[in-house]
Length: 413
Image (cartoon, rainbow, N blue to C red; front, side, top):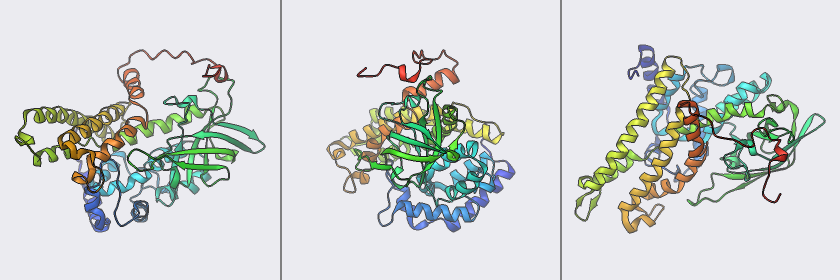
């Protein structure tokens, strides 16, 4: 691993730092730094409007989607320069999370499989934050098995007619476009009968229903499709090859989500450093110190695993499925850290919101944690990826692998 910037990287870092210092929306900096680990909100402004304005300013100056080609709205920077930018952007990077699905998942899929005219039409507004995209994969009956989806796409002239339902679609309620995985042939094994499209979320027949979460937020949605027509030219990849197309999305999804997960350990350590228990400072309590030491080791492991990936990028190499380690460890760690913080708060830990201790940061963190462990692949999916692709262990037994989808037994059959 190399922890030092090259001269070129140091120059890029200095330029990025200077531009951010001169242009960032500093009126929101304090709120962003102190924002909840489970949900970022601004008291006197709509965070989506602020995020769009910041993204637009970055795009106008050539700082949006740094690693994308210039013709699609990016800067043409190296992967390591993208990492440096994220480090320098600091708390203002929280605003970019409004676009994480479009920039991190939909954009790369469009670049790989869309027609050239579509790339030049749709990608620049996506990069600049003018248009927001979502990813329509998960379904109620599919769980973590993306290939178990049942949303149908049937050819009708030059269009495909879509009927079905998606669930847990992040940001669908404010998205302009989305990428959609459908089933076009139920008579072949489940991975072979899928086809991917992109669509306008305002198309007739698309209905978005926000899901109320335990935290009170509605970041996820149900999306229903009733005779939605999508032109064939909006197909991504070949008919029946949707699984291979989706792998591009899923690979980028797990990398983007894994990089964005915060463990909450620095916040917990700071809290314990100032908390007074009945018998003295929490930081001097042996049980507290033991817990903190355990999480410090995990946090250090995550840091250096991330640095290993960054070093690979710096050398022009592509990080492998090891990125799944970050999501797996951080996802469970954030839940454990939040639970312990509420234990330390005692009875006051049941109060959430602005009136709670630390404005309910750990409460929001705990309520959001289950979603973090599910999105982008459950813990079990992450363990399978690590076992099979990192450790080289034998794959899971999949009894439905070669069975036509419409022959797979379901409840009620």
